[in-house]
Length: 272
Image 1 (cartoon, rainbow, N blue to C red):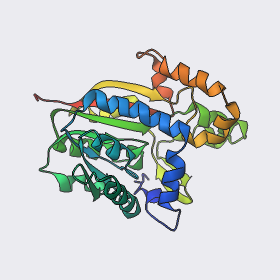
Image 2 (image 1 turned 120 degrees about the horizontal axis):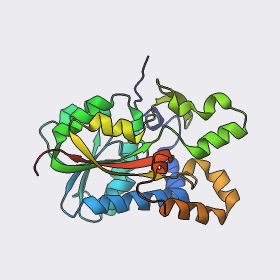
Image 3 (image 1 turned 180 degrees about the vertical axis):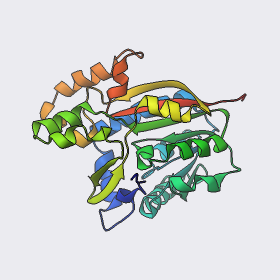
Image 4 (image 1 turned 90 degrees about the vertical axis):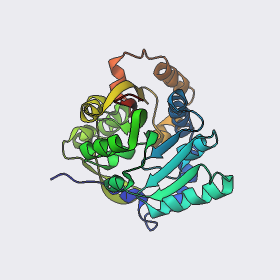
C-alpha cells in the first residue's frame, strides 16, 4: 500500500524545535552551497516582478532570497510551525509585500485554482513528500501560465554517499532503500514518515502531458550532502576537489541522475 507524507517532520513542535533546526541546518556549508546552486537556476529563469508559488517552503530561505530581488512568492507548507517561522522572518526583513505565507499541504493545491503564476519552485525534496505526483502535475498545470517555468529539487532514487554509508555499516537492506517502489519509512527529526524517491525520467514522464523538460542537473553527485556533515568535516580540503568534480561535470553526463538531489526545470506547454 502506498502512503503520502504529510510533512510529518515539519508538523510537530514536540518532535523538534523548528527555529533551532533552521539555524543549525542553514548554517552548514553544504547547505549554503546547495542554496547558491539552486538560486543561480532560479535567476536564470525568473526576474523581478514575477509571481511564484513555492511548494513545501520549509522556513522560507528560498522565498526570502527571491523576495529580496523583487520576486513575489506565495510560500506554502503543510506545517503550521514552519509557517510561523516564515512569518517571523518576513516581518523581521520587511518583505511582507513580496512573501505571502500560506499553510497548505500538497493535497490541497486545487484550492488555488483560478490563480495564475509565472512559475513554481520546490527545493530540498519538497515533492518527495507525496506519492501523488500525477495529481500534483495536474494541479500545477492549472496554476502555471503557458510558458511558465517550474524548478524542482528532488531527492533521487540513488545517492552514492548514502549507499556507501549503509554498506560500510553492514546495513545491506538499507543501502538501496530509495529504490523500493512503495516508499521508505524513515526517521526525520524523531518522526517516522514515508518518503518517496524519484528519478529525472519519472518526473519528465509524469509531467509530460503539460510540461516540457528544459534541463536537469545533479546535486551532491561527488560532494557530500548536508546529511553527511560528520564525513564532510573529516574530509577537510578533499571536499573542494569533490565540489570541483560536481561543478565541472558536463551537462549531458548521465551521472546527473545519480546525485543525492537533482534539480529539474520544466516549462508549461502552450504559447506565453
